[in-house]
Length: 398
Image (cartoon, rainbow, N blue to C red; front, side, top):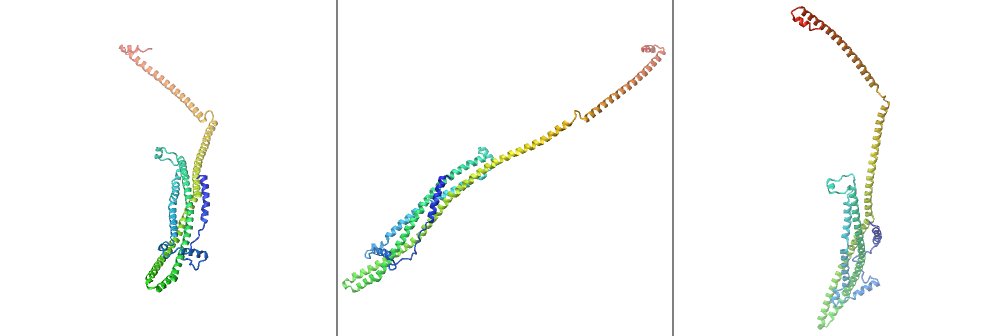
């Protein structure tokens, strides 16, 4: 809501308080009509003035008695109905409902930046939650500004109606008091007719000559008929006054409803709308703070993970390096194993050499034995003398 709208709402609040503090006068009771005998001098003069409007010989004066006040009543009633028709209560209520609908349509769940977009949102390329929320906030803000401007206009219209209803109430009350004067004048005229005029006319009939008696008697009947018409007219004025008294609370009821609606509109403009705007702004700020806190947490988590991983790697690397630093060029176990393998190799070589030497010696003995056997065999063959042995024996070197 703009500062200009807020300032106008504050000004209107003072006007509402002024109108609310205005106390309208209460009407007197419907049957509290002051008679001519009981009235003070100013009221007595007013009653006599209205009695003078009655001409018993003129039927129109009786029928139209108090009509001037009735015409004023009709004008006031039409003004009251016109005020009710022209009162902009409907659009004002619609504006209030529009504000509520606008706020209710603002989903706080859209604030959750951790909420993953649905498959449909990704397909349509919709913005991320925080971006969508910010755009929605701006849209709602524009709607609230527009509706508050309308509400301010409705409020001024209702204030004018309240003032008009004040004037209407005062004029209706004046008419109510005016009817009391006409009723008092009519009743006083009836009392004068019953006590003085009609009895005098009846005496005149009795004393009239026989030739004129018919005409005078007709005048008496006309006077009594006019008297009855006047009585009925006074009764109608009493009914009208009663209806007028009933219209006064109706006017005040409509006026009180208008005041209540103006107060509600003003409260909405001065208190509710700024509160809504503050809460919406806080919602955006809180979400942005939450998003920043989430980023800080992720950064801190990453830092802690790096510190833990580096410390672990340092420990393992230091262990490996220290172990390598403390090792000799050759491990003693490797030297022992190499020495054992070397000794085994030498011993195995010596063993193989001894075995080869023994095998060669055995083979040489075998060869000598075989040579001796061969020579003996050849010698035996040569000694036979059949030529076969000679040929065989001579084939072996001596």
